[in-house]
Image 1 (cartoon, helix red, strand yellow):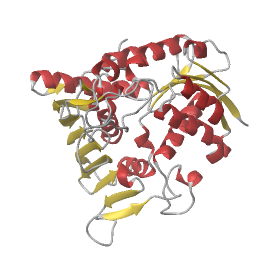
Image 2 (cartoon, rainbow, N blue to C red):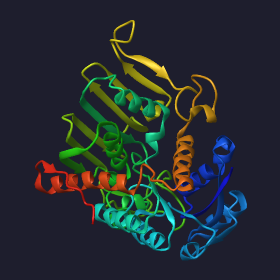
Image 3 (cartoon, rainbow, N blue to C red):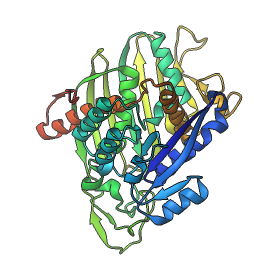
Image 4 (spheres, rainbow, N blue to C red):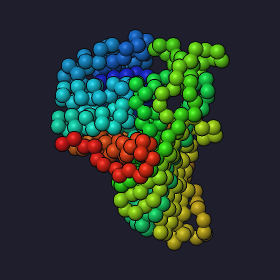
Length: 391
């Protein structure tokens, strides 16, 4: 039995295109699920992007007005990949229109926007999804399984980080990601959100934090309107504009279960290129994983291993989801494969009429931790994590 689900995507930049490829590839890699996404309509303010979506990606129609998507009865899901500043308006309108909603993280320009979005979707009964795709790496899923089975014993330490290369080029363009009024916070929203989500997913709730921030690159070349991403660069002497949100955030964190940890992110650092990673320790073992080596897990379970020390575990078709994409052991999958898995799990929830995770509720849990970090920036003290949920 197949399930056709109509998709409307708002925003067709790099992430909108990644989401669209993911939907299109679900029937290719997971035919047995019966999930059949239908790319009904694209909305983007740049005409060339609309043309690309309809000519190359298979969207049936395109428009510059996102409101037209909400009026269509043949669209079941609204997928939002527009800039963060637009998330609240788009998601709340989609909820009121009776649509299920997938939104790229962080779901809102700042934590209280996330709370308003979560409330609107919950009250509308919408099934929601959020783009915390690193959860879906097979080696992360395996780590989660080992934790649930008690193989590490009680956890004691957690160190999460996301060091990314995209802002280290001092000639990198001043895209919307570097502007407080368009992106909201900088790395707090962009990559700390991933780091917080991974920590919550693996270790559980965080109760309090103490945090610092910094802007290392004060100015960047101005982009041409409608073109250029945060991976493009200008030239020496180009007009520049001010960076208005943070390049770096670091935090000490305490978890409800007693785990102690650190979370640290930077977009302007030299060396790591896309090091979304964690290291965790328990009473009987340890594990570490890095997105730069997505298909490898460093695992230390001395009671189960013939030799002492970390051993390298390679991903393969014995681990969740991977066998549909590539068979055998040690054969690699990549970033966009995680987006396929993410889209598949969301649409399976939509088809079944059940809650999905990560949801807007999970995004709100992340935002509540981020909010405590911003309060710590001001107070220069430890701050308790308080849920921002609006009842």
